[in-house]
Image (cartoon, rainbow, N blue to C red):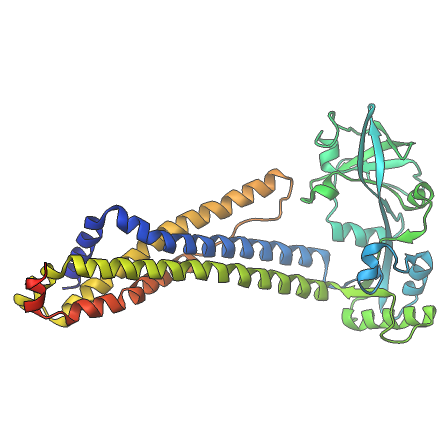
Length: 401
């Protein structure tokens, strides 16, 4: 019996031709948005969680400014003095500061402006390297005693910043000071990092005439809770700066706190965009309802014939419910295909810009769930027209012109 209902429903869809395709459009646009957004959202979330795991959950960051003031350069800076204070804090294992500025970089008479970072040469370097996921591709790392030596990022080394590749042994000018390139980094995945240059920390302080750090990073000792150590750092810095609790002119954040902040933002964006997709699905449902009402009118005589030869109200209602459900399901299948194509295209487009960590991720559960949801939306949208068709009296239906 179900096979007969399905055959009649498919015949009805086929007869409507282009109208059936236009009816499904609202559904597959909505499903395409849902699938592509969930796929990209899952991929971004997985990539971020992986990055946080690789950077370590026991890392603590200390930054200048406690609020919006830091965005405008008016924040009280963090300096080498703060590094010394943090090193003495209970539970702190290793501390490293980072000086980063946009500088004029010249190579073979070509000038670009790129990020240049000063890295410590002591044990503090390790924590920054782990956070930034930096690995040497060619040449060597910076060593203690190096002064005017530099390591270049992947894009700079491979000719994506300057017209020519920057190789180990070449000389580059940073703010009119000559540096010898001693190594290059593997691709990190962030265009800013991959087009940057690294120089010794003390050299950077001298070159940029500053002792202010963009960030100080500390690692908690094994066996210590990073949240507790972060509070210890806050307490020591407040005491050193003679500040009351709540009046901090610095920010201390653990990796776990940063991860939670990023996840909240991703979830809010995802909810907002899926809400937009739900509106499209609602419009698609209204389209199916409109088409099914029209179908009932067009097939009134056919309904009368079926009832005259013994079809029950439930039979008529089942035929129209299945037809509207199939319209939704087919729209869902098309939408899933479009959504997966969109998410993969975005992934490839982002990778072409040098960002490697975004990988679209979609589980079969999401695909089958989206198709099932589209079927339910279609069936519910066709419920009222199906009920109207089922209530038609055979005599009235057969006399309908």
